Image (cartoon, rainbow, N blue to C red; front, side, top):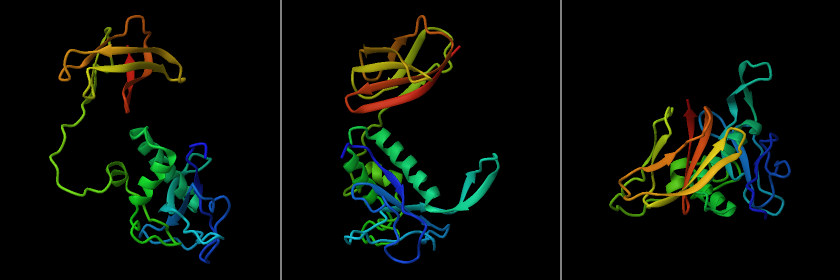
Length: 230
């Protein structure tokens, strides 16, 4: 209800029905099941329905034979929804970064609709395995003329002098922010250009050598990039 997306492992108490572990049965969150490499439900993945009859889990990802780095630094394999849920969390984070204007519920809706079982969800895998591109762009209902892509280019990078050029968006103005690696906002200002075919020009006088994050924002469009200052 606070607008925060919660991604929760469904649990590893399958294959019996209604074996979800709390709070995977909660409404308004994403409960994640586990699939094998063959993309079928893993035997241990907890199943729905919930106690009040709702379909769960919501989505699924690889959780049997998942590759991970162990506490000793070695690469290994493990099974469980504890390894499938983080994949969906990363997917959702990337999608929300691309669509910052979406609400939490809109984000969930887009992910569910992109699932391999969106037309026929069940209590094994929910809406299935999500697809980032489908979630981002939605269903293509008709053939339309493609829009000219929004440019995004930052140069020179690494930068030696003070002039930085950024191709961004389709507006004549934008908000530029310079952020250090600790997340501190070092500079924020409005910038303009004479034509959308020209890059924005930013002067970085007084900026010390190091690694930075730059951000450009125009209404709901936000882009970020790492910047190396020599």
